[in-house]
Amino acid sequence: MHRPEALLVMRPDTYRLQFGAEELRRLRALAELGDPVWTDDLDTPRVRARLAETEVLLTSWGCPVLTEERLDAAPKLRAVFHCAGSVRPIVSDAVWRRDVLVTSAAEANATPVAEYTLAAIIFAGKQAHVLAAQSRLKPVDWYAVGDREDLSNYGRTIGIVGFSRIGRRVLERLRALDTAAVLVADPYADSEAVAAAGGQLVELDEVLKRSEILSLHLPELPQTRGSIGARELALLPDGATVVNTARGSVIDTAALERECASGRLNAILDVTDPEPLPADSLLPSLPNVMITPHIAGSLGTETRRMSAQALSELERFVRGEAPLDAVTREVLAVSA
Ligand SMILES: NC(=O)c1ccc[n+]([C@@H]2O[C@H](COP(=O)([O-])OP(=O)(O)OC[C@H]3O[C@@H](n4cnc5c(N)ncnc54)[C@H](O)[C@@H]3O)[C@@H](O)[C@H]2O)c1
Image (cartoon, rainbow, N blue to C red; front, side, top):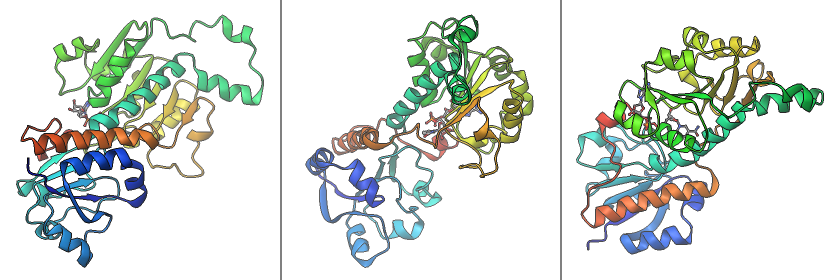
């Protein structure tokens, strides 16, 4: 077994978080680690000397873009194992022009987002965030809510936009609820795969017209920017909740603000556009809107699930096996 020369490239805090004793033990068993083991700067003479021998990079948040010039300094480079979600911040055309394997840990990063989404959907069903905000102003009487039909997680119709890694995991988790239907919109999805996951693939407009809770899991691409605009929001039934853990830009923020300010729609948002919202934005002050600061993805110990995925990819590479989650230019064109 050839143990390739490896270099870790990420911010210092990310390195400390993602590579504890267990991860470093696993890495040392698979690869040669020189000096330095880790860096966040690919341009110093000391790191350039290491790069000349480096065969694999383990990258994460804070890795500089892998430009032509930096890749020229790494002539032996054969693979980049990204220990985080999207590889967009680090790849350049130069990476695709070379025969370098790139893998991502987006599958591992999908788990906490799906968990957050399930929690958001359950809270949306009971309008927990709305009642909590109202209680801060005036105690909410149990008898005033006890006879409301709309505070329920039984027999709901849930809409999912994007049968993506996260979208698929959300569908799996929704099996835990007694939903009436889970409707999925995705121009690239296969209806049999959606059905096997417990959903029904339909057109976006039908998802919008029927969903009491709408959860967005589509990637941010030029064609998805603002794709949930005023027209789309207007199709949602009165009282529906929009859950967005994808990217703020896929929704028209002004249109969502109008719908929520009128009280017709509610929202639970982990992402906004812009992010954070300006200080004078109305959206965060609305009692029917809950905003969290982009926390659905991997945080804290969850980041080690991503390290584990990258190390499994390295293990497969060392054994000469095919990667599980290789990213190519074509894959990236429709991915997060
Ligand atoms: N809040 C967070 O912390 C957090 C963390 C991770 C990912 N995200 C975001 O979550 C979203 C989903 O991420 P992922 O890794 O599951 O994505 P992914 O890369 O797996 O998604 C790709 C899939 O999305 C679907 N898709 C593409 N265009 C679409 C469209 N116009 N309409 C519907 N579906 C479409 C296709 O099935 C495609 O295969 C992305 O926007 C991503 O940026 C957020």
